[in-house]
Length: 328
Ligand code: 3EB
Image (cartoon, rainbow, N blue to C red; front, side, top):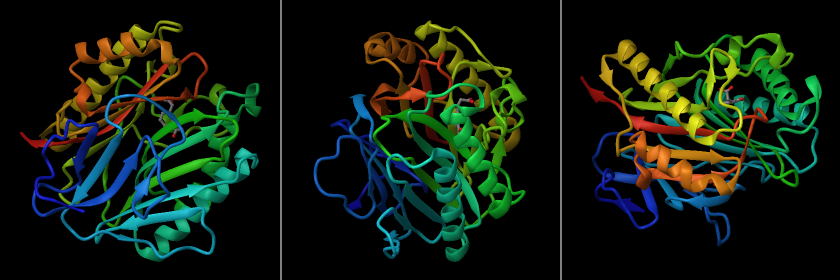
């Protein structure tokens, strides 16, 4: 598992992201976007079709990583270092989404508390059939309600993690993956967007529980950017135009990079030491999507494209990722 050069850019369908600066790098976690063999400790996958880009994302760190002890069920697994904890939780297919969200998040907070990791840095939420239902019965809105209730009772008034909320097959169960830390991270909001946790009532009975970006990592030099889409203020823009949605999303990222610089004094950008994930509603949009990303200086060799639904029906594209911050 040892990797002599965590920052080396592996082009053969594989990419790395170092959670700590270069040193004696070891794998912290691997994300296998085209899983074949049985599940191994420290290896995670997503039930989404891989459309383009690296098929493997490796996160490296200097301190030793070890798998969590197996739980009483096989639906929660994870890995940890001295500073960071990564957990995956799964609900059974067909579970009611609101209660599944509340239950998984409560279990996440229980695990974090018992292991001494106080803060969630980032949560990736993979939600089956996310766009089904009308009004407050919509799956995504009910997911937000269950998640908010767990946060109210178990996480309290600590700041929200960076988030990703995307949808996939109705046949799958809710899947939440989360990164937590011992030390308090720094939370960043985007001046171009209303904070998600302050979205108005029209988006559901409880607003989505996430921050736009989070600065974390042992050196506070890694930027975890939430799933970001073509939303300005709180409204979706460019319905039905994929390229315009990508361009609007990249303006949101640039605005977040500027906000990060103001908050930390560190430079942020689409650097090649980062890793990026695209969630694309329609596979047929792949070519124009890649062209628009390249035009916006997103390093395609570090970008994995997955087929996924997005939390609002009119949104065709979402981009999340992790970048390294440079001292100014
Ligand atoms: C948005 O900006 C798009 O519910 O955790 C992005 C990132 C979105 C995270 C979440 C939802 C979530 O509102 C959707």
